[in-house]
Image (cartoon, rainbow, N blue to C red; front, side, top):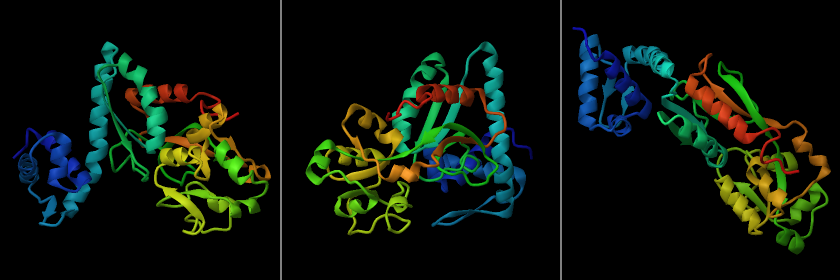
Length: 307
């Protein structure tokens, strides 16, 4: 039996897989879990094969479910793009653009860039996933992700937004109290601020003889998993911080933080990029407008340039 609501049920199936549960898909779609279950039942009945193995602990896809999920995601993306392109004939840009990026970067630069865009295009909607994990635009049906650093080989298409440099900074009060370090060796007598969790994103291993996953418990006086909080800790005089220039550049420029230059800053010899990555060869009109606004908001040189 053909299912007249096949496309709708297909979207529900993809949401269930992405969220790993009926309840997660229900929250995302503003429906009840029982309504989601009924739609999955209808889809399985239409296809004549089970798509999900259901248990009290977790959901798993059958072989048929995996094949459907693999084929459904690009089809749904194309449907959404087609809808937006046809709707754009009246000059309006509509629909949802989904982006994932670092929390601090999103708050500092993405949200301000969206202000005028969303005023100019009131039918445009934005879903901004503020996360430090490596979001996957294919698996998570994101229009784009913003990543910082060296890019691994992939099929994703990259647009460079800016370069990132890491600045060693401290408050003037801290340096007056503890002294200005002159060499890398001097850092051993200083109080250091480090990243909590994850790899050595801030690069202390490039400056010091420490593990690649960051400082030891004895070396770090303050740890935090949020760039903005680390910036505030440095401004409060808790210690030296090695932070991206897009986090502390404005503080250096206004004098709230002092840039400490050591050994010519060899760790900045090859600045890493800030990239906007997408899966589709041709970006949607929504993403093109948002990308242009973001690049304008960042500027060249970037708005956070410390000099």
